[in-house]
Image (cartoon, rainbow, N blue to C red; front, side, top):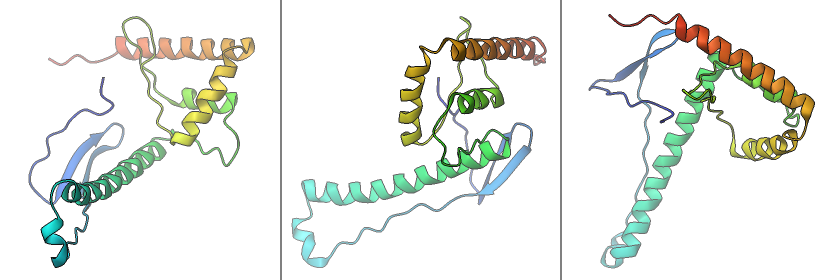
Length: 167
C-alpha cells in the first residue's frame, strides 16, 4: 500500500487538495531547479560518464529540494492535525511512543494487524527501533501497548461501522 495516493493536477498557478478536518487547501507550486554550467572548453570532453555525472548532480539537487519540501509539508500537516510530538532533546521513551500511538487514528487490516505508518527523521528511527527491541522484553510495557492497541482497534471498528456508504 502506498503512503500517498496519486492525484491528477491540472494546469494553472495553484493546486488544491482536500485535507480532512480542514477542507479544501489551495496553494501555489514550489520552484525546484538546478543550475548546470558547461564551460566552452568542457564541451569536447562532455560525453558518456562525464555528461551523466553532470546531469545526475543536477537531478540530485532537484530531488533534495523536492524531498525538503515534502518533509516540510508533512511537518505542517502533522502539526496542524495536533499529532506532532517534540521530544525537546529527550531520549525516545515508552511514554513518548505510547503518546504517539494515542494521538494517531490507527486503522487495521482484515487480519486485525495495525496499518499505521510513523514518519520520523532517520536518526530517530534508528533510536526507536533499538529501544523497541528492548521493550519487547518489558512485560509491563507490552501490557500497556496491547491495551492501547485493543482500544485503537475498537475505535477503528466503531469508525468503520459508522461510515456513510456512497449512494
